[in-house]
Image 1 (tube, helix red, strand yellow):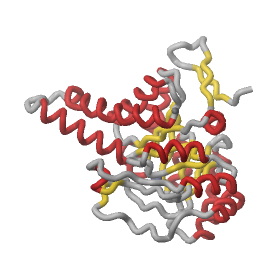
Image 2: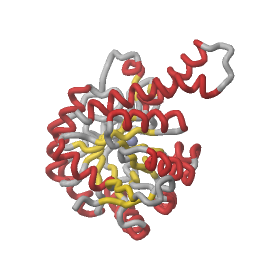
Image 3: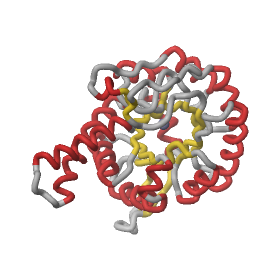
Image 4: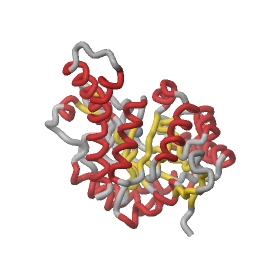
Length: 305
Ligand SMILES: [Zn+2]
């Protein structure tokens, strides 16, 4: 029987609708040769655009908020918005707490009802990362046994921004040995390795001149060693063929953030430039929704091949 959460929608009190859990959807990705698209949202424009793209293509989607994005939108508010959108759509929409750097913040989102948490202690030495992540997994599962906890190893830089110079990622790629050790010692459900990916974009990538490249062989080795679903962070402006091969090699979730931020800004600029006297927010912001939706649609089509 398929693992599922049964929700009762307020609009149809007599009809019970079955929504698959994130764990169940994730388990199917490997078999189906697809990945769940994870998109960062910081306002209603991004949330609407991402959910509309998923609905249009009839594919599952994860919306993520880093601690900065959560501080702006509100933890309880995004849970309520996502629940409401779920009730109105027939595709699974999952809510992820992206890059959470303290146990207190992780507990807050678990209690609020997030489906998954990226507990990120990757800036610490490996042993300390293991110790703190293990403690977090235990505490989070005590609050909600169904919550998925993702751990991070290696360095892929920080900040979904436009970088003037490439960040120093000289500490290198994650290894299969540390991936296996990390998963076995911490009990994480999902692992995010460093496999050539990078947070943020370089200016040359924004101009469309260069793309990020991934180490596909390393992804396959880590997958084999770790034996859990893998997330690719910093997926914006990665070579399309590398993304396809990464999914085949074992990546199950792909994060796109900076690419959406660039689309959000360009859409907003277009909305303002083409209507210089307009003051109605939804008439201006409609351009940003369309611009973001186009990027989300294109990435979801690729990830769901
Ligand atoms: Zn990330």
